[in-house]
Length: 176
Image (cartoon, rainbow, N blue to C red; front, side, top):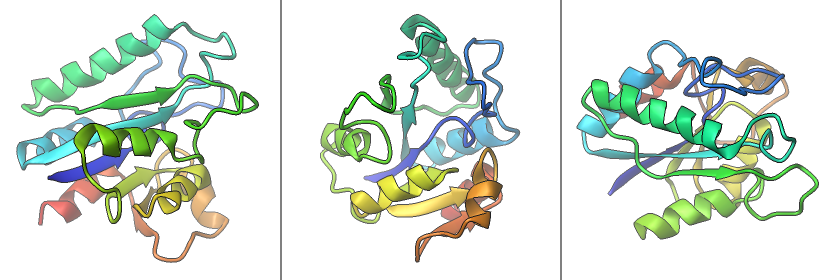
């Protein structure tokens, strides 16, 4: 099985320091939907692991998050692709859960769901916590410069981190 795991905000869709709170605010980054579809059509399983503390903070309800993920699935399907498992952490930073990145609970859940070891699997994110999460389960950390990526890059990266302009560039590399 060829599996790739993606963070959502800042990787697939535009991010906001004020949170993505509505379906109208969920706007794909140019090329990201096509990249997911191309990977899927080439036999890759594309899973998503996303912190969504806006739920715990009361900024939006779970059904709005589910509508965003349904829109993601629809947009990728329109391009002939498919999105695999989407897991989210709805907890706040002080809730002490095991799923909120940089803790590796969501990645472990994806690995268990698909019955695959996580070692070497690419985890694509735009933040330091994404990279830390990847390292915690021996995934390959991959940084995109979209979202918070440029700020993350400026602070220095863990050894071995791969860097790409955006998700389209990641897909182009994997599909060559």
